[in-house]
Length: 194
Image (cartoon, rainbow, N blue to C red):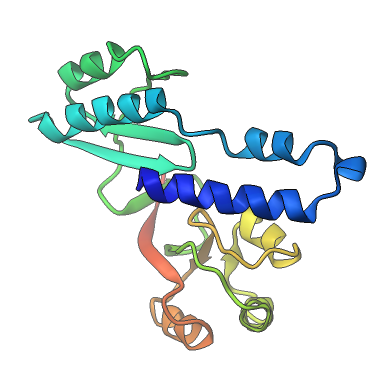
């Protein structure tokens, strides 16, 4: 994977260098280096050290990777201590979550819907996005998340996994799948907060 990332970076660097005029936007090399840092041997060694720790631990954990960040979720204090001891990890932040509702539920103060469905991260064609936008515009009983609402009018075609819709019937998802199959990542029941 690291070799593929290095190769991709070389291609991106050639593309940026060839398409951006330095007189208008500044140095193309600096633009690329700000967005895509070089993968050094130190970075590779640090990643291997982290991978070794996570692959050999007996602790249960969940790893979520997003761009250049990793989030480790665990109930095991010893794993947290081992991760804290890694000097290569920067910007460490710890928090404790108190689970106050049943699994696969979302607690809201004044719920008006029964279910919340999250999107997958998918790149749509402009035509598919238009179909989705028209479909959602004609569903007044559905609540569209603020991020999804903003995306619908933005010039981007990739959905994000934090986009969601609140709805009352599971059968409504069947209609949505006719507009764009495979769009929903998960659905959770909404319950009222006490």
